[in-house]
Amino acid sequence: MGTLGRVLYTVGFWVRETGQAVDRLGSRLQGHYAFKEQLSRHRTLMNIFDKKPEISDNAFVAPSAAVIGDVQIGERSSIWYGCVLRGDVNYIRVGSETNIQDNTLVHVAKTNVSGNVAPTIIGDKVTVGHNAVLHACTVEDEAFVGMGATLLDGVVVEKGAMVAAGALVTQNTRVPAGQVWAGNPARFLRNLSAEERAFIGKSADNYSGLGATHAEENAKSFEQIEGDIERRKKVAQQSDDYDSHLGIVREKHPDLAFMDKSGSKGPH
Image (cartoon, rainbow, N blue to C red):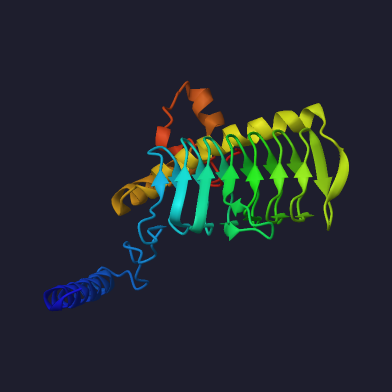
């Protein structure tokens, strides 16, 4: 960066600082003493040298997630709050309709102990539970990785297999299709039931829809959010039983479909 570039950068920095100071003052004058920054300084997407993330237009990446370097995320997939996907010394690939849940870490290795290239590849319709760690491994289509599970270098979770919550799958282990592995170190536990197979697909479908809802909510302006709050208050004060006696049919606002009348999240 030359002299002119440094000057412009410095001026830009102080303009932004001044703007935030004015915003804080305006919030206090309006009676909002808890200042809420609308522009997060967190960088959800970050390049590493010439490597940059490629995110499908209809995928959801939460604002507090970090997707770094050579990472590709497929259609209708969702990367949830607090996740880190770091594709610096190798690449990460995430298929379509896959969900990587809150606080999960996905990383890669330049090479493993055998000298093989070790990216991380996650297929289609995969569910990765909260707080999992996936390092230089492969998770095939329609597989399930439970909460807090750890997959080390060279692991392959075959299509339709399940790694139980808290399991530690050691290097170069292959989890065969249709099996549940659990424990530390992980071992074969049993075969998947028909209900569990169906659950894996349903989980992926549910999270694709939920990701779209969160994407829409995150895109709303402050005014839209405040309007939703007022509408929810009105809905909470309405009585379906009273309305039915009067023959009143109220139209449900589509933006409120995600909330029940108590103001809590509905099932997903």
